[in-house]
Image: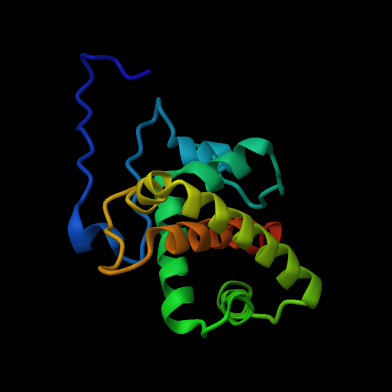
Length: 171
């Protein structure tokens, strides 16, 4: 979309701790809007926007489920679930709900997430290579000595919570 002859600068991603600051930096080009913002119907910068319309498309869910940035965030949440959430899966799931959604889950929600967690754990125990690949996605490294299958399963459970409509939208 951008001409080769344009004088636009290239974006250089940070690495290490600088990559994980509590901010979102976006490299804007007038002719090529940021794909993430486009998927979430961000207004363009040329017109004022007094009110945003709510949108919900499959592309938004795919972005949240598959983008490396979001997957790393899910893995960071999973790491905290394992270290701070308690000893049992139900305690960890409840801790994640309180952390992400600021509320306690109802028993049905815990059962759904626990079922997904158990399925993912069985899959990753059977395929440790897939578990290692899942926990090594992105620049951040998994904690030393962690069980890759357990961390991968909890990462997918955390990804599930981070992709809930209740988590993503604010009205």
